[in-house]
Length: 355
Image (cartoon, rainbow, N blue to C red; front, side, top):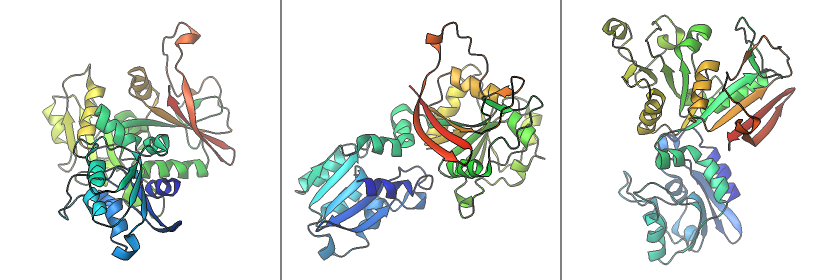
C-alpha cells in the first residue's frame, strides 16, 4: 500500500477535479504492475493498470489501491469497480472510502458481489493526507487551504520598505514552485500583484504546464492590464473576484479573464471558497501579504501554513507574517502541529497544520 501511495503522489496536481489515486498489483509476492491517475483525471489508475496486463497475469492477483474504485461509468462505458470485477483479480485492499456519492460504498459492493475479497482501512491517515483537498471539497464544499510564507529567522516576510528578495534560498524557492505545481489554484491579492508584478506560474523545468489556476482577490478592481499576469492570461486560467459595480473598471479587463462579482462583502471570503469548490479546486495555495493572510486566519479559513524559514534576521522593524490577533491570554493563542520538516541548506521548511 505504501507503494500505491507513492504512485498516487506522482499524480499530485495533475488530475484536475479527480482525486490522486495509485495502485499496485501483486502476484506470487511480486509487484507485477503499478499505475496512477492520468493527467486530467482520466483514465483512472485502475483502468491504466488493468490495460497493461493479460487475463492470465491478472487472474488470482491482489490489488492495492489508495481509494475505493469508482462505481460510476466513464467514457469507456464501465466503472473501475466493474473492470476489477471482470478482471480475475481475487482480492482488493483499499485505503479510504470515496466520499463521492456516486461511488461511496457502491464500488466496494460491486466487488463483493463478484466474490472478490475486500479489505479496507489500510494506512487510512496516509490516504487522507494524500487526498485531503479532494476530501475537504467533497465533505466541506471548499478547497483545502494552504498559505505559503518565506520568512526570516525572526518571523518577518520583508523589510520595512517591503523589500523581500530573497529571504529564502534557491532550494527553498524551487520547492515552493513544486508546491505550486501540486496545487489546483494559487490565490493572491491586487496589492501583492501591484508590489511584486507576480505571474504565479510554476517555473520548474518540465512542470510549467502544471501551473495552477491563477486567482486574484481585487475587491475594487484596482489593477490594470499592464501587469505581467494579464499579458500571459488565457481563457480559463485567470480568475478575479471583486465586489465593484463600476462598469468602466469592468470593461477595462481583457475578455479572456473571468471576473466574478459578489456583493456580499461580509461573507466575501466564504463565497470565494465555495465558488472555487464548485469549480473543483481541491488544493488552494495562498501567496499574499500580511493583511489578507491575517484576514483568512482570523476567519478560520486556513488549514495549514508552509513556512520557509531562512537563516536571516531582519529585526523588529520588519513586516510580520501575521498582524494583530487581539489576544488577551496565551491560552487563546493559535496552535499548530508539525506535519513535515525539511532542510534546504540553511533554510528550514516547516509544514504546520491548525489543530
